[in-house]
Amino acid sequence: MTDRTIPSIGLVVGILVLSSSVSIMSTDMYTPSLPDLATWFDTSATRVKLTISLNMLAFGLAQLIHGPLSDRYGRKPVLIVSLTAVAVLSLACASAQTINQLIAARVLLGLAAAAEAVVGLAIIKDLYTEKQQVKALALLGMVIAITPAAAPIVGGFVHVAFGWQANFYIISAMALLALLFVARLLPESTIPDRSALKVSSIVSGYAALLRNSDFMTHTAILGVALGLIFVFVTGGPFVLIDKLGVAANAFGFYQASIVLAFFLGSVLASRLADYWEAMALLRMGVYMILLGASALSLVIMFDLVLPWTLCGCYMIMTFGMGPLFAVAPSRALRSIKGQAGTASAMLSGIEQSAAGLAAVMISLLHDGTAKPMAVVTVALGIILVFLFRQSIREDQIRVP
Image 1 (tube, rainbow, N blue to C red):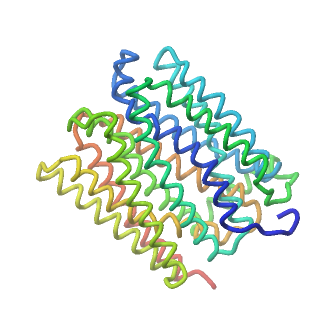
Image 2 (tube, one colour; image 1 turned 90 degrees about the vertical axis):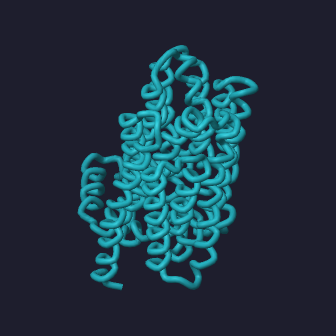
Image 3 (spheres, rainbow, N blue to C red; image 1 turned 45 degrees about the vertical axis):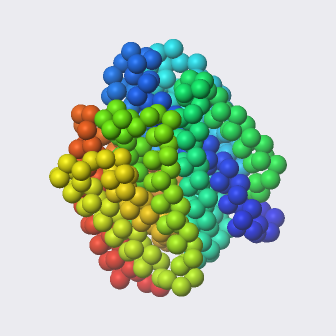
């Protein structure tokens, strides 16, 4: 920190939870509205799904510049500008008159909201040791899980009572609230680097990261895991609401069950962090994800698709993501010295872009059934196996 005082993990995580929740709400809160948006705008389900998938792609790519910006100007100023833009662009979403306008507003919203993920991870990297990072990330994941659990529940009732636009008004108000707390309470964690925005510095920094096998392996693991989450976020509403007859204002409870599993996995990771090696936690997470993906393929194969069977498979996967998301970021950043914002940007950018690509695949394969979800989930599970094997090799060749 600039004043050499390291704040408590609780204070930093609390503020980061508040700011990060705004980004989560901008995706999850209006998901119960997705099927009705097709009717509202007189368009196809495929185009409506683009409001999520293109938002995520923009979110991921924008982080590549938010990282260097936070290295150059500091973490706090970037967060302040981002939250201000999110408040304004959420109002633009609510005012959209056509599906193209909504898609455009959602893309811009993704560009603005991207800073939260970069800055939060960079702050934790700035302030704490690797072991403290695992605990902080587990705590962050544990508390942030509450937001995607509550957001679709609230969003479903808001949609039924006031219409889909009201959800974006709430997101705008939450962004302003987060802005207030960030401006007043969040300490600056780094000394601005005047060279961070030089093209040569940015290019050389990202090139070095691309050559870093340890960094890229664990970043890819995070991307695959987040992609699995967005397979459900993008395809789940249409399967549960349109195919299986779940009411729009009840969908949030099913999504909440999946997020609850992530919460419990994060709780377990935070408890085991003092006793287990990081690789053991990562292994547990990967095995749980593979178990859930295998169960989903069996559910589809034997035509056992029901709300509780579909959600049950994803609950197993997201439980495993608790320890995975607590460990993988710190392992990706463990060999990075300096410019934590740039490294966090590439990590989050690749992670979110992978999630966006998974969402696009679900949109393109949409056939009204759960089969596209199973196909993409199993494919991502296979990729995860190869990445985890590479992670083991990285551990074996890494010099302590």
